[in-house]
Image (tube, rainbow, N blue to C red; front, side):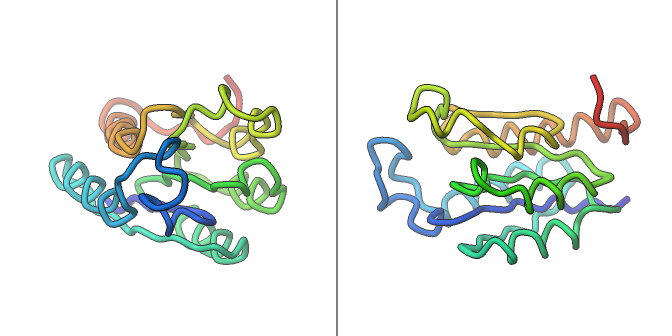
Length: 155
């Protein structure tokens, strides 16, 4: 297993800081990347930080990191609620997957309450703002240090 965490961001997150700042805040995606790199560095991890507005781009990245990486932090954006294809890709992962949302999706529109990503996720963070990314990376470090990874999707 290597020490690289994939931080994967879905559609419209390239507009973070501009799009609906009353919901998502004023931090940019570059700010999130800097936070992730700083957090990971302090934990002895490396970051591969990506964003794609295309479903296939997210799936290709998941395939690349599904085995042997330190884990995946994914904010699939709107694909969270619609993409069985991303769920299928995540179900092939032999590494932990942390689902991360900037807003509390459960306090928003009803369609946002359904998450296909959650069905494959080891853990879910929502409503912590961009700080949720740092929490996700810390949890991956904890999983690496404290216990062997479970490869089944139960419990």
